[in-house]
Length: 61
Image (tube, rainbow, N blue to C red; front, side):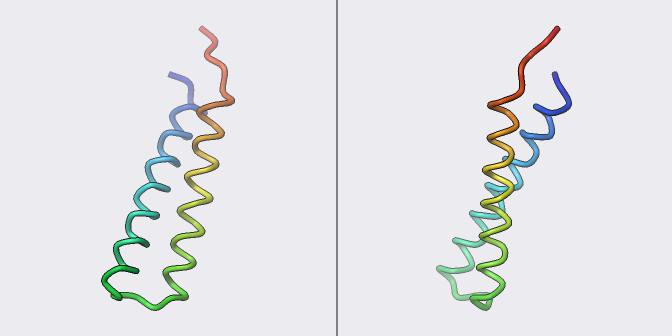
C-alpha cells in the first residue's frame, strides 16, 4: 500500500472522528460554540484532504 494512500486513510478517519465529536458535543451542549467550530472545521479539513489523497494517488507496483 502506498504511503500517501495510507496517510490519506488516516486523515479521513481522523476527520470523521472530529466531525462526529463536534456533532455529539453540539447536541449535548457539552462544549462552547467556539471550540465546536474549531473542531468541526479541523475535522472537515482532515476529511476533505484525506479523501483527496486517497482519490488522487495512483497505485504503482
